[in-house]
Amino acid sequence: MGTGVAFMRHVCAAAVVVATLSACGGEEPFAGSRIAPTGSPSASPTPVVAPPVGSRVVEGDTWRLAVPGNWEESRRTFEDHGELVRWTEPSPSGPARVVVSVVVETEPEVDLLEQSFRLEQRLREQEVDVLRSTVRQAGTQEPAVLVQWTENSRGDERRRQVWQLLARSKGGSIVNVVGFAPLEEFATSPVAEVMGTLEVRG
Image (cartoon, rainbow, N blue to C red):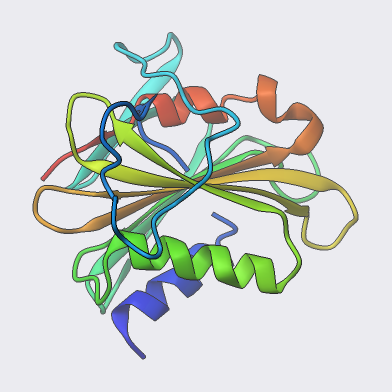
């Protein structure tokens, strides 16, 4: 199995977005591409200069962010050169309701634009309303792609909001940051704040 395909499956399996973002301005970074994003984000994380009170800083070789201090963490590394880190808000019963994950593909077979296009097409084939837009990471001219959609939580009929950001590090790795929360709680959940602390590097 190709590295890109394998990692996109790991992302989906984790139900796994998002970096310190600002709305794109000026020239479209993907201008001329037949698969360039065409949407405008409904909302995007606001860059957070300092870690929020009560959070802890976590990092990998190509990324760093801050998560609430009481969130639970799990990490996995893969033979095909990558890692998955997942943080979940403590849940007294049932599955986790609020989750942020980072999936890093260190040797991608296709670029982030192609990966985001395939994700969008797969969701549309499942008749999911999806929005794919271009965003910029704070402090760099490197473009990123944000994909937003809603879906049923696994095992029940509740709806949840999902954001997935695909960003490229200086070394060429693709950093996927994915976050979700119940649809009616997403705006007040810590997901956007956590994503706003993300720094892509390396």
